[in-house]
Length: 568
Image 1 (cartoon, rainbow, N blue to C red):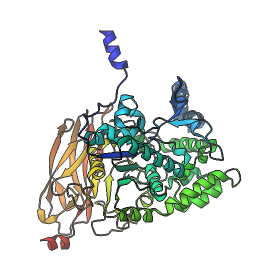
Image 2: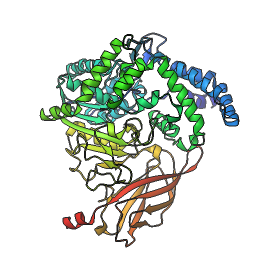
Image 3: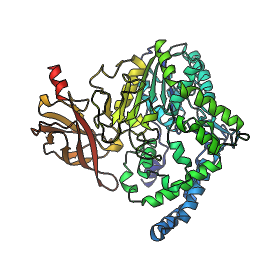
Image 4: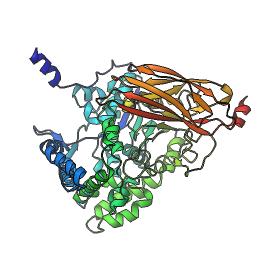
C-alpha cells in the first residue's frame, strides 16, 4: 500500500491528452511565443542535456539556508547584505548560461528545446513529453489542435538572444519547412510579446505566406522596462514583487494566487535585492544580447546604447540592434497597412494587467507599457473621454491605436499569459482559423474591453446584454453573474458592492464550487447624474493553503444619456 502511494506521488506527470484529431480543414498554424517561453538547452542531444536554468535550481536547493539567514538579518537589522549575496549568486547560477560577449556571441552553447517543423507539431510535442517546456505555445496549440488536429499546429522555438532580425530569418526557413511538411496548406501566424516583433520583421523582410495573423501583447515600440533595469539610482528602481510572482505563477500554471503572501515582505528588501540581481545580470553579459535590445523603447534607444555599449567592442552587436530599431520598430504602421492591403487578416490582443519593474504608470501591461504596445495610450490622470474606444475604467483609450477596430483588450491578464484564460484562447483561435469576428464591433458577446477568466484570479464578473461592461440606464435593473473560475478550489463570496455607478448591488454571498456561478443584481439608485464610470467589488475567500480575503474590482461605464436616447 505504501509503495503504491509513493509511486502515485513520484511518477512523472504527463501533459494534457491530445484531443482526437479533427477533420483536416486545410489550415496550418505557426505559434511564435515570447522570450521566456522558448526554452534553451545546454548540451542538447547528450546524456547531460538540461535547461539553461538547471544550475540555478540546484543552487537554490543547496543554499536555501543562506536565503533564510539573510531574510532574518534583513528583517531584524535592516541589513540586506547576506540576502543580496544570495540573490547575486542565484542570478549567476540561474541565467549565467544566457550571458553573451560584447560582440553578441554566446558565452555558452545553447539550442532551442524544439527546432524542426516536424518535431514542433503539437502531436509530436505531446508524444515527446515536451509540452511543458514551451509554456504559452503548447497551451495555445492545444486549443487549436482541438479544431484542426495536432499535425497542423506548430510551435516555433528560437534563441531569442540573437535578435529579431536573425530570428525572423529562422522563422522564414521554419515556415518554408512547415509548408513542405503540410503540403502548402493555408497558414496563420500567432505571435506573443517578442514573437510579435519577430513576425513583424518577417513581414518587413518580405514574408508573404500568412493568410491571418494575431499579435498578442505586441512590444512594437519596446518597453520602459529596459531603462528601469539599468538605472544606477536605486531610489528610482521599483520592483513589484507581487506582480512578478503572479507572472511566474501563471507561467508555471499554478492555480494558487501567491500575491497576498508576498505582500508581507517589506518593500525595502524587495528593492535592494532586485536591484542587485538586475545589475549582476546586466554586468554579467545579458546586456550584450541583441534580443534584449529589441525590447528597448524606441525613445530610449540612442541614450541607452551610448550609455551601455562600447562602439568598438560592441560594433557587431550595435549593427544588429540598429537593424531592429531602425528597421521593423520604426515601420510598424506601414508594415500592418501593407499586410492588410495585400489581403492578410491582422488583429491585436492587448493586456491591461499589473506592473512589474518600470513603475505603475509606465508598465501597466506587466512588462510592456500600454503606450508602447499596439498604439493604445493611457489618458492623463483626471481626464476622461467619451466613445467606444475608452475602457470601462475611463483610463484606457484606444482611439489612437494602430488597429483601433481590431484590437481587443483583456483586463487583468498579465502580459499575454493567455493559457489560463479560455475566453482569450477561444477568441484567438477563432480569429486565426475563421477570421471572425472581423472587427471588435461584429460580435457583442466579445466586447473590445473584456475581463480575463483565470483560475488564479478566483472569480470573474459577467453580464448578458451588458457583456461590454457598459451600463445602459434605460434598461433599469441589471442582472449579472459572479463565476468561480477555479478548476479545483472553492470560493466563498463574502460581499458584492457597487461604487460610483448610480447603482447599488443587492446582497449576495455563498460558497461556490469550481465553475459554479452566483447571480447578482445591480439596482438603480435614482441618481440622475449617472457618473461616467464606477466599479463593482467582490470580496471573497479562495481556499488556498492559507485562506485570505481577496477583493477583485471590475470597472464599468455608464453609457451617455444622449447616446442611449439616440438609439431609441
